[in-house]
Image 1 (cartoon, rainbow, N blue to C red):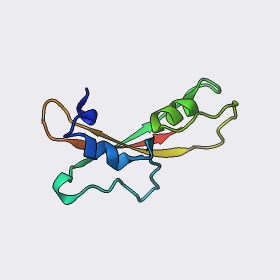
Image 2: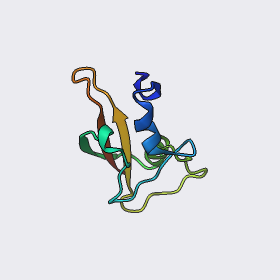
Image 3: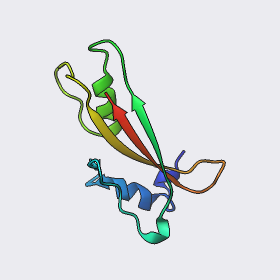
Length: 104
């Protein structure tokens, strides 16, 4: 669980942070890692659905490390957010970079 804060995981964490805030990556962008730290990317698309005003947009903002909107507003259509999350699964022992496409 504390792998990201360990010396081995710190370069992966630094690749997704800018001034201690999670970087926002565009559609075609991804974290830049040195060739020695290159890892496979696993992509997931997560679709959040639910009643209006339950906190779907606030959840996506929280996961992305951005401030949640202060007032409720209805999301028109679909908002897509791309989030990268480095992890080291216990079974493989090799780091993986998860690319999460959150659709709200």
